[in-house]
Length: 126
Image (cartoon, rainbow, N blue to C red; front, side):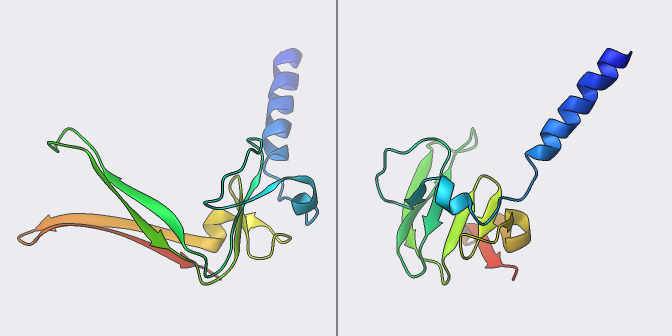
């Protein structure tokens, strides 16, 4: 029983350790890759999305209801710089918060007599 509790304790501590907010020095220790630029970097990297820089976003509709899967790429840009690392976000690359506390993502869709509509709203929460 003690062994099982010890293993459980270690698993919980390991899980909590991965929940720690990154420090301001993360940007100095992990490669930073600018979105939409080719880079041969490791899996562990920060994605930088500079303000007012166009980058592609691909939308797709797939499923057994459709005769064919379709996709479309649109170019977008953000009003502010944004850094992304795993499930963390930052506006300056130093102060990190959980992405769900910085970004509000609201997908929606439906059909009416005019056709189908898919919409994604993405807002800064701060």
